Image 1: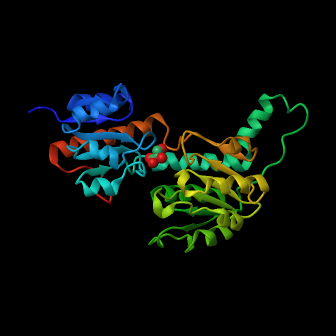
Image 2: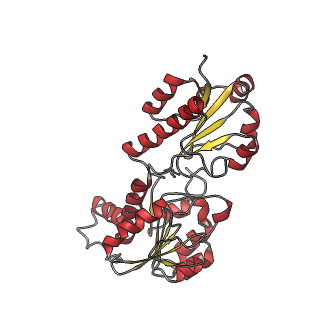
Image 3: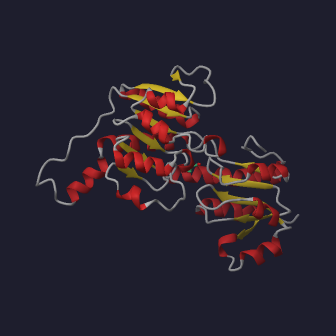
Amino acid sequence: MSQPEILIAAPMLPVVMDALAARFRVHHLWEQPDKAAFLDETGLRIRGLAVSTLFGRVDAALLDRLPGLEIIASFGVGYDNVDAAGAAARGVIVTNTPGVLDEEVADLTLGLLLATLRQIPQADRYLREGRWTERSFPLSATLRGRRVGIIGLGRIGKAVARRLAAFDVEVAYHGRSRQPGAHYAFHATAIELAAASDVLIVLAPGGPATSHIVDAAVLAALGPGGVLVNVSRGSLVDQPALIAALQTGVILAAGLDVYDDEPRVPAALIALPNTVLLPHIGSGSFATRNAMGSLVADNLIAWFETGRPLTPVAET
Ligand code: DGY
């Protein structure tokens, strides 16, 4: 039997590319000089699409150009890059890569939180610029004894909360609903959580339901000693409101791994001394990115061999 044809939207790790090439007839979208002509020619034959949440969108226009599509295997736990409702309406399955990145993202969240509070990157720059000889580095805020609010107590949120237990802090959370069995205080709104927190960590999924859940009012409630950490999606935070809050002392500092329009980061954010800015590296270790890539390949293989993908998203 001939191998199913699949399309890979952007380069993936070699181990994934090799696994896909061994099972499928693979096309590389990024190598096509005329993408429209290529999709016209192959659209009916392409049955699987591998995409990354970190690069590119799968919108209705792309879905319309792939009428033979059966499955979209997305690299990443967040899949707000994929029009999942549009895919469901066309009978196309969407899969993501949950479960294999929780601990890595939780580690990074703690690292970013400590880096922001203790100004670790700023201190590194200070030393490299030879300024230590002029005077000691300014004193920083501390984590111990603070109240930490988590927006989104899902798998990653819980992994962060577990780590926080070692830091002698009080943890509370806000989410769509109270989590059965969670022994942290629940707040029904983001603004209530912010008012009861010194540090606010954003870990909920992207999409319309959470868009700008952290707005100017939530930042004002967090207050002048407050620190915001966002490791989920830029869309959850009103970015212009955050910049204004950091510029005017409405909050103390922010640690960000995600932005509105990645990889573009506003110059105003970069200019602020009270920010630690990372280029979306939450899951970015060799081991975890390989595990995510393998799950992309395994979902495609499972679908074409058994008709049952391993990790379909809820909408589809
Ligand atoms: C995800 O999996 O959604 C992450 O953002 C990728 O690091």
